[in-house]
Length: 445
Image 1 (cartoon, rainbow, N blue to C red):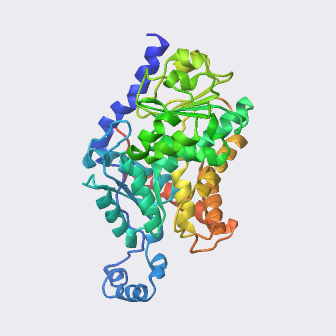
Image 2 (cartoon, rainbow, N blue to C red):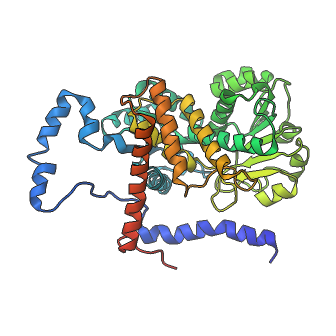
């Protein structure tokens, strides 16, 4: 068996294990008790009649809900199932395993109690109203796997109309972690953010947000070429895009100063970086296109569940750095390294929103933690087993929310660090204890 066949077999193993283990556990999360229950008399405090007292207090001052309940640590993971991973519109029920997985990562990596909520509507206005009605119970909202372009409209309205943070992980989360990876990749090849030419392959929710965030970080928009299914975005296409897709219209106006035309090959030619979040591969990107990039090309192939090109093929074509979104390949670029820390930070200061400035703060924090460990082309960013990356993000994001005047609660750097460390450590200790006691059953081999 050749090495390529062996690598392909290993790449297929997570899917095989998932089909075996999901029915064994029947999901990944459950609700657990947080308070002390020694006798049945304790229910007189936690429920009737005692519970009426905090209810009355909250009715007089709604902000007390953060003190008397767990609202400040509750996050709703909301999806309509219209764009699940690389699988497309597979429906709300079929999206539930992903949302449960998201909730698992929220808890284990961020100490956050997240609930998967898969909604049976494809109407963006109905989804918006549904999310707005969830606000009394939740400290934050994570939107997930919602089709483009309606995801832009949904996020924008909810950010304007909600009093709690609303975040679309496929936009803001992906953009944050890609920027963090780009920062360290450029540090490794010794190129400057403001000088590089970048080809963006795909113009869905993730890449639109990535383009806007890397521009906010200092990339020259004129040196970016964005490619959608019809080819490179350029000024001649802008008139058509204006009504069809306002986000692409704006990109067509501000990117591609040379007014390049063509497809993926033309966008990649001479580029320093290619960032692809398009359709699952392999075979979407041709090795010959990498050979025509600038010296020390950086390749992020992040389509799920299969990247646009296998990483070993990209290396053979001359890529200096290759990253994918998968945890079973070296150099993972995945939202999981950012959203638990970002939400930990906004929840701890009871922030009213999540801004691009907070995403930039998180991206540089992630990159700096990775750089401190030593950047190498096989690992640009810290891995998820490093709790420090989430704690430090929580601190930087919380402080940025305070600086922007978006925090209900003011905390010092030391207080934010202590709160994040306690929450994350507690969640991981509980999991380890349940496994040790056999309450969480061992994986059957």
